[in-house]
Structure formats: C-alpha cells, structure tokens
Image (spheres, helix red, strand yellow):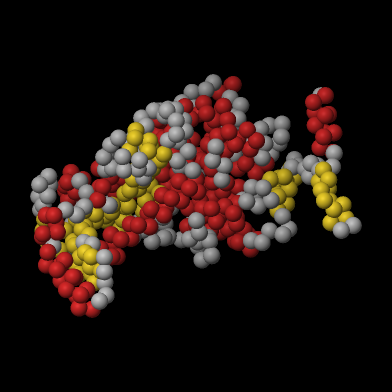
Length: 455
C-alpha cells in the first residue's frame, strides 16, 4: 500500500517544460488508460474474419493443468502475433505491453491493469515447449488460411520458391557459417503465391539452397489439389532450385516449372547463334539488344533433356546471357519476361517479412523455438495481408508495405474507458486517416472479401 500511494503521489507531480510565451507548459501522468496502438482493433476484426488465432491454438497441445492456468494459450498467441504486427519485435517488450488496453482486448481480455497479459517468461515457456509435429501442423494452418480466403477455386497458381539468410549473433542450435553471405546464419525457405505467404520453413545454412524444396512442394501440391482438384500449378525459382529430382517430380505430377539455370560454357556454346546475333545488332544500332531463343539441353547430372530458354543480351559492357529451364509451353520472350522475371517481386515480400515483421528475430537457443518464432511472424504477415486483400482494396494503401500500414492505421492514440457494458476507445480527434479507418472496419464487418490475382 505504501508503494501504491507513493506511485499515486508521483503521478500527480507536474513536469515543467519551457514556457510558450506567457503560458506555462506542464505535463503529468494522470491521463488515464491510454494506448498508442488502437489499430489493434483492426487486427482483432481481421482475425475474427480469418479465425487465425483459433486455428493455431487448435493444433498446439497445451500440457498445463487447466485449474492452474492463468493465461489462456489462445490469448498468448493473439498477444504475441498482434504485438509483432504492431511493431514490437522482442519478447521482452511484453513486460510493459502486458497492461496495454488495446493489446489486452486483441488477446480477448477485458482491459484492466490488475489483470495483465502473459509476461515474457510465460511466453518464453510457450516457445520452448513446441515440438516438431506441432510446427508441421502450424505450417499447415497457413496453407489452410490461403485456401479458405478464395471465394472460388482458382484455375492457376504460381508458387514462388526462394531462400534467404537469417543472421544469428549467438550460439543458437544448428547455426552455420555461410560462405556466400559471409556470416553465421539460418537459411529459411519461403513460398509465396503472389502476395500470399504459404510456407516459412527455417533451415540451417549448411545445406543446399534447394534442400527439402521437393518435399515442401509435395505437401503443398497435395493440400492444394485436395481443395481444388483441377487447379494448375507452376513453380518459379532462381538457379538455386534447378535440381533434376525436383524437375523430374514436377514432370511426373503435372506441375509446371520455370527455373533459373546458372550459365556455364556448355550453355553458352549451345546459345552461340543468339549471343552472336545480339552482339551484331548491338554494334549496328549502338543500343543494347536482347535476343531470345530456346533449345533442348541436358546437364550431365540430369535424367533427360529439357527445354532451355536463353536471353542473349548485349550492351556496351559486353554480353550478359541468361538461361531458364522450363516445361511450360510458350514464346521464349514471354516466358522469360512475363513469367520468370516476375519472381523478383517475391524478394520484396521476404524483405517485408524480415524488416517489417521481424522474421529474423530468431535469438532463441533452441532451433525449434526459432522455427516457432518464424511462424508467429508469418502469422502476423497473414493478418496484415488480410487487411490489404480485403479492407484496403481500392485505397492508397492497397499495395502499401507493412511499415506504412502500421504507421497510418495501427499506431493510433486513444483513451480507453471500460464499464460493465462497454469498452470504448476514444481515438485522437486529430487522427488524419479517419476515413480509411472507418472504411477498414466497415469492410471487415461485411460479407466475404473479393478474390485476387494468384498468377
């Protein structure tokens, strides 16, 4: 009681600042229950539409004694994922966030200082009790969310595969030094379909970039075709995924592929006509030239010959040929420019995942706990992407990065008033994006969202 009284007295003491003309400028800590994250209400509505938190909770066993549980597992998942979406990257942030009224409401709890959310140690125990079978089921939830979001079966899906480095700075399990990236890291595998995240799979970096890509594709194809038997699938990736076993499986299972192929002397000899023609045209016109062609080719490690597309480019610095292997029919130039080159957009999504949603905060010692953290970040991406796909369609934020959406829609100041019947958020009167905020709420409360382009 003495401590509480002292805190109350401290709150009442005004803090003086430099005067503004004849006016005194003071501050105190008696503003009441406030939050700077009222946009968590939008994330809460998005989850009500998706059922994401409930789906994740359903696949995670809870071994705790129910009569002794204070913090519900679903509430902890909602607390952690919502906080990541709001921009709080560290587990330690929850020491102060646990009494934030917006986060409490998003976690399904009535805002109250005397009933805080889970502490960092409690959340850490959740991370470290997740096992591999649970992680597999959580990964399946991401695909289920993708399937459920389609109002009608798509005709064609293009799946982008890519790997990236996740630097580590401690002694985490299964860390390795990667020569290409020149640091110790993990090597997560991502699969996107357009802007939609399907797979985020943490791997050690002491492996081939395509390690387990074929197994991941098998699981994806099985799950997608179970929902949509007639869907056409095409995978897209850089030369790191050009492996003959992966291509053979695609050939045998009716899946298209458009994969980069690292150039070598044998490929350049086979494409000599196109390379020479591009050089002649460049010399004649003085402008960079591109010549496209295709031919059958088989590397010594492949099981058979396959179609290779060449882009023979020549400019002032010299020749720059590029190669793609594919089983998709079509004009070489269109396949290269309109299909293969579009995979570069996936790199922006990965950057958004790592920079905007902290997917690289894999600082746990245990490898499985770090995979769990990656899936929490991925779930935050699914939540934000649901806002873009449904509530922000047709607005200036329809294609905005996570950071922009967070700044304009989620970081909103509000005073929170709790009564027996209502929880009221009085948002800042000067909030400049009130029209967008109201529109997002209206759309999230409406019927199922419009479809999007998945090819």
